[in-house]
Each structure stands twice: as structure tokens, then as C-alpha cells.
Image (cartoon, rainbow, N blue to C red):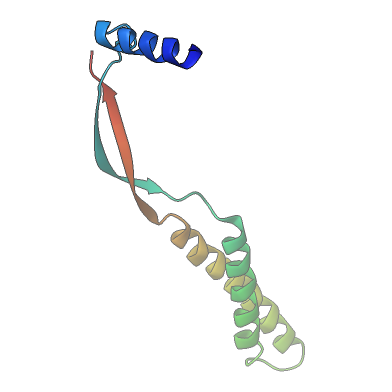
Length: 106
């Protein structure tokens, strides 16, 4: 009997419209959004270290004695700076996403 009363009551509410809340309909569409990717610190560190190693190896090919040491150190510093710069330039790639945008209809 209790199930019968619940069903009848719900049916009456639906028929009178009382069970249907007045909800604002939303108009939605997909929108392509381009965002700048945030700086990736790890990529910059790897770029700096890789550049320093490559620059040190190249610098080591020049000079002799203490000049070889200075050339190696100079190559490492220059390579690290170049590697950091290259990694930083690639950090600002744009990322394309599709977002669902809804505006309420009043």
C-alpha cells in the first residue's frame, strides 16, 4: 500500500508540474583554446646540463696545458648558457585544448 501511495503522489506531482523545478537551460558549445604551457623547470635543468657537457667536450678539443682546462671550462659555461636558452625557448609552446563552454539562458 505504501508503494502505491508513493507512486500516486509522484504521478500527481509530475502532472501538476510541481516535481519539475524551473531550471535555467544552458546553451553549450565546444571551444578551441590555446594556452601557454607553464615553465618546465626540469627541462631547463636538463638543457643546461646537456649543454654544459657538450660545450665542455668541444672546449676540451682546443688549447694545451692550462689553456685546455680554460677552454674546457669556457666551453662548459657557454654550452650551459646555450642549453638553458634553448630549453627555455621550447618551454613556451602553446597547448591546444577543446573546452566545453556553457552560458546560462535566463
